[in-house]
Image (cartoon, rainbow, N blue to C red; front, side, top):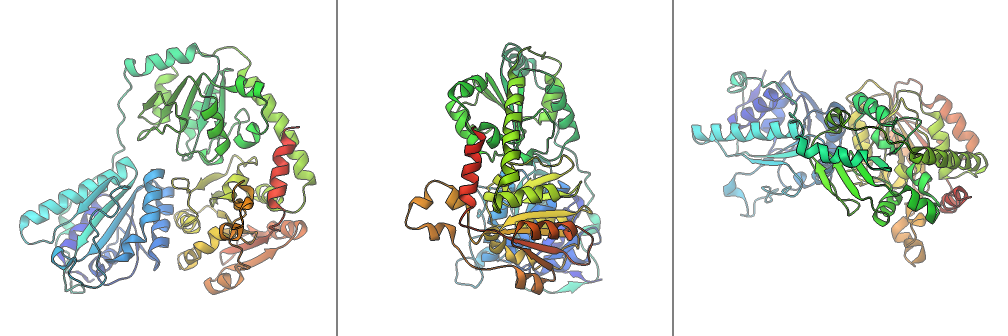
Length: 560
């Protein structure tokens, strides 16, 4: 086998192996040649070639989303690195471990007019957990310095769950190879350890428990969270308290018939009396960012007396009333909290569940009679998804529609809600699919799909990957939002395009089907999820002129 002669490249590769980085997404280039050659020859590492760096980074993010282990991506110098930024920002806010490894020119070649050269140090400084700017090896001290930085970066990515940046300066020659590794066998493998959590002190937890036990109305609000059997069990227990109302988003991956699982549906049309009744004494928030704008508006207007954010890294003051951030995992928190709290007898949860059932009945009546539209299509899609599917959702209207329906409890649901961008949804879903045997289904809108169409330029897409593309010829959410439609510039927001995915599907080896009405959509869905030799795209065309009216009427009907 042939390995890079460059000793710095070997130290980088050795450190990654020692820290259990087993997946590396590589984009082509010359400056990163020593890393490309080396990673491709190491048996402990799975390498994937993806040309578009923006897609490559989101694919790596999707892999890490599945494995919860640091996934690396490697690029050449210059603007290639900047294309990683959207995924880096998403990983930063979504707590996903990513390792950015960028090749760079040596310092003496920066800002002298050399090609493919930018100031790479500090480029991600606002959205990473750690930066390792390595030194070109001139003396033995440089080796020790580099190894120390590398191990710090990789340990932080794995333990603190977020992105780190390793910048590696390479001078020429770049392609020189040798038969033996210089450094790799000498680096001991470091067994990964979970980030240890210290028990909460009595001073920290007892005042919260005392407030909890004397409060009659408590809301637990869950945002984005990885599927967790333990947290599910803990919340099932918490729901035995009639003074607790649990509100879940689809991306929380928590399911129970006594939770409020469609927040926007629940809040639609609350009377002033109901708004005051459901105003909580205590708000407990768990997980990542919240999709529902209605719950943000409601809790900002009807603030709880106390807001406790349970999160190991950060406590967001989303509702402008944060009392305390408890920096542990919710599972760890509840393992101590349950010993100190007791149920409070009242009808708070009962009233919430009664209103939920009223909203569900109105929802079902509307669904049965609604015309063909985005709303109707999402009902058909939701009812069609096979059990135990991994459901990936793109942003904008897609995630909001999906949250109006009861998602089957066997499904795992993911969406890039760290920064909520449309730029990498398809690539993320593909990255996840590359690391699981489960069928992964991406539901996406046309703008999100077209924006990330280079995601399909990937030879590693598994045959059980499915894309359902709801094409309403533009960004339909801008007709739903109150502002854009009132302007004379709606086309600049909505950006109608008249395009479809048929030729893209053919070019990239996807089976393509389309539907334009209820009957045809139902027919296509009956066979869409079955095994095939190729991944599939189902493109469902909906009328762009009526979707906003259908959704607005839906929320009006819920008030009745």
